[in-house]
Structure formats: structure tokens, C-alpha cells
Image: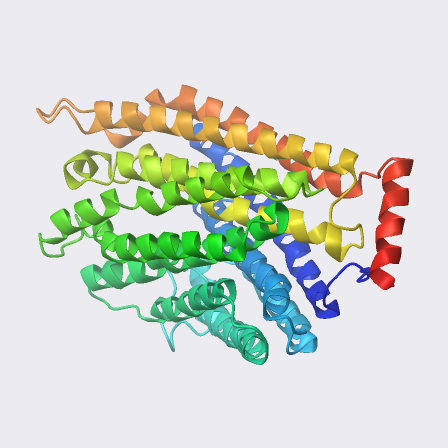
Length: 478
């Protein structure tokens, strides 16, 4: 049972099931990533039980869904505290959790147990065709369910904000969450024209991860940094304005770097190149923001693991989304690298650094409080958690480096010799096996890091830690 004695508002405890389920889905995503990694090398691994296209569908969909659960849990935790009022309806939050969890579970089971064409026919895709597109493979009825859950969620947190304080953090978070819901509506628009299809498909995929999700990232990071550093809210808010301004200015027009080769007008090549080349700026500002807050902290917060996750988020987001994004975003470069393993390298580090790590940051900060452990987990648990941090983060760096090397070789062998001597796609893939094996090994170490991270939740403290925790609980109840 959740101990709410150290929570500012009892309704914040509703974040716990969202965080727990997010972590379960995270583990599933990593397992299917390892299956895919082996299928790159051993083509018939687990075939026909789990074909590559199904493993990929499950891997990417689990990524999206666990991050959404994490964002929702983060909102349910920080919005009441920022607004200084109880959550509008904890009951509604619980109902929406079970609706979303059941729908997500059924979707994954459907991918694994039912042929995709059959799944489409039995879930209403003939009435409103929305299926078959990358990342948006969810059955139409599930997409409708996602919209209902999103509307209920926005109503719940929106009413909470309206009843309480209107802080910058809450306003930025709400803007990001509303934008997330609005952009998802383009998942229902599936034109027959392939150019139009891809044009608007990116309005979901790009304007989520390089648009409104960055607002959510900035708001959560700002909240945690205020809590663990004690830096003045006004200072944090000024940094937040700069970050979201840069993110929106560069990210919206930067959508053009996806429009180079899909049949859109040629003016998207300079527009996409210029503005997407500026996209590392908000992430660089985030690095300065996080380290400035840590260096000027006014208190030593006992939750050092959360502080480590916060700093790690800013650095890895800058490297993955910023640096690795810039490497292949200019159209003359992208002409050769588009759709290569360089793209995969960027995607892995960017999603882990910007979004997986920010969810793990808020979980690291909030879960000890929700579980009644005081401001932080016991020291031994934090040390275990930080081991998990380093194993996962260093492994992701190596996954990115191995995929980058594979991408460079792929471009060299398959795309650069334009005289007709280039290798075919499949022959090129055979030359990349050493990089795929290295990537798989790094992925196994990542999984070990995730297991260590999970183990940190079950590590008990020393006797002195337990005594301090009980004293903190007693003070909270006075």
C-alpha cells in the first residue's frame, strides 16, 4: 500500500501505478529490442512465432506507450504540487489508468497473436482506415481509446491547474500535453496520396518528439531541479522560457528535414537544413540550464540519484537529439545517409537521452516520496540505482557508436560508389554483422543495467537510514 505521509497532497499517489506500469513496458521494449538485434544477424530467429516486422512494431509501440504513461504519471505528481491543490479527480485518474493499461496490453497481444491484416479487419479499420503506418500501427479502435484517455487526462489536470496556482512549469507542461493530444489527431488522417500521407504523418511523429514533447521535458526537468537544488524559481523559469522558445522556433520549421525526398517542393531543403541545424541549440541550453542549477544549488538534497538523472538527461539529450541529429540533417549529407543505420543511432540515443531519462528522473525523485521513504531512498538503494544509471547510459553510448559505425560503412558500401559498383542492400548488411553483434552485446549490458535499476527499488537501508526515515515521517505527521 502507498504511504502518503510524506506527500504534500494525497492525490499525488495516483502517479505510482502509472510509473510502475511504464517501467514494466520499458522492460518489454528492451527485450523486444534484443530480439530484433538478433534477427538482424540471424534472420530466422524466432520465426515464424515473432517475425521481424512484428518485433519492430512491438518495440516501437512499447516505447511510445511507456513514455506516455510516464508523462501522465509525472503530470499527476507535479501538477497538484505546482498548483498547490489536490488533483481534481483521483478516481478519474485511476479509471483512465486501467482503460489505457488494458488497451495497451490488448494491442501488444494483438500484434503478437493475430495477423496484422486480420487485426485490421476485426478492429474497424475498414470504417476508418488508420492502420499500417510506422509508429501508428495501433488499431483504429485503440486510437479512439487513446483520444478518450487523453481528453479525460487533460480535463483532470486542466481543472487542477484552474483551481490552483498558475506557475510557469504548469503552463509549459499543459501546453506540451495539449499539443501532444492535438498532434495525435493527425494519426486519423490517412490520405491515399503517399506524399500527403508522409507530409502529415510527420506532424505526429516529428512535432511530438521535436516539438511538444520538448515542452514536457523542459517542465519536468525544471520541476526536479527546483526541488533538488533549491535554486530560485525565477531563475529556473527564465531558463525554461529560453529553452521552449528555441525548441518551438527550430522544431516546427525543422520538420522540413523530413520533407527532402518525399515529393514535396524543393524549398524544404534549405528551410529544413537551416532550422534543423539550429535544433541542437535548445538542448545545449538545457545542458547549461541543468549544470548552472546544480552549481548554484542552495541545498544538498538527499536524493543524489535524481540529481544524477537530471544532469544525465540534459547531456544525453544534447548528444543524441542535438549532435547526432545534426550529423545527418543537412540535405546534401542526408541525401546519402537517409534511412541508414546513422538514423537508427540518432533515434536510439535521442529517445533514451531526452525522453526515457526524463521519465526515469521524475520517477527517481517522486517514488521515494510516494512510497513513504522521505525525500530520498536509502543510500544503498541510491547507489544501486546509480549503478543502473551508468550501466544503461554507457551501454546506450556504445549502442549509438556501433550503429553510427555501421551506418558509415553502409553509406560507403551501398550509396557512395555511384558508378554502379555499389553493393546491394542485403550484401551490404552482411558486411555489417560485426557492428550488429557489438550492438547486441551492448544491448545485453543495457538490460543488465535495467535489472540493477529495478533491484534498487527493493534495497533496504541501513539501520541509521531507517531511523532517519521514521523520524522524517513523524515530523511530516506533526
